Image (cartoon, rainbow, N blue to C red; front, side, top):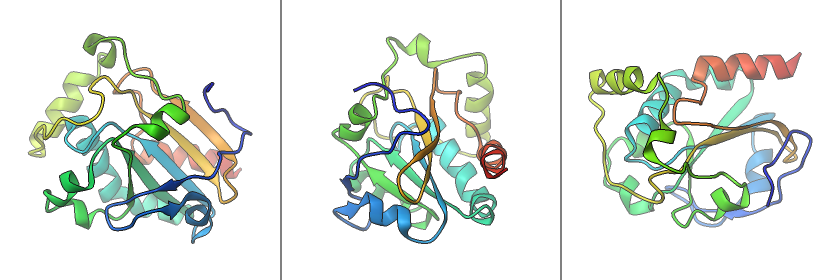
Length: 185
């Protein structure tokens, strides 16, 4: 399947979360906010993914104030999240995709090598994670998996699509808020 682009509609699918099985995606989109930010990270133990989730947790209000809900997709198993005390306190849903079906469906590629995953910002991000006490956890899924995000309306139409070129090619919560504000104009 080719990469998804703005203007396309995502097909409906079912997904599991930390607390629920077989959640209908279209129903999820229609609950509450006007838009959904669907972020595909790698897996729960990934240090940079943990850093991204901490940023989301600390800044979720910025998204909510823009009438946007957050759904983070991970290649992780439910048991991995259950083992982490902080996972249940995250203020957003985590879509579990340990078999990487949606990563494949959305054409989110893996890097060809570990070197391709990094860019000049990676050392700074890893240092930031270390200062927060974040440590690499359990490896899951494809270690070379790249990330992506989609901003959707509540009908499943893609308002913005981005496929990361490396692990640092993902906005933080402030940048996401700016992108969404731009879409609202």
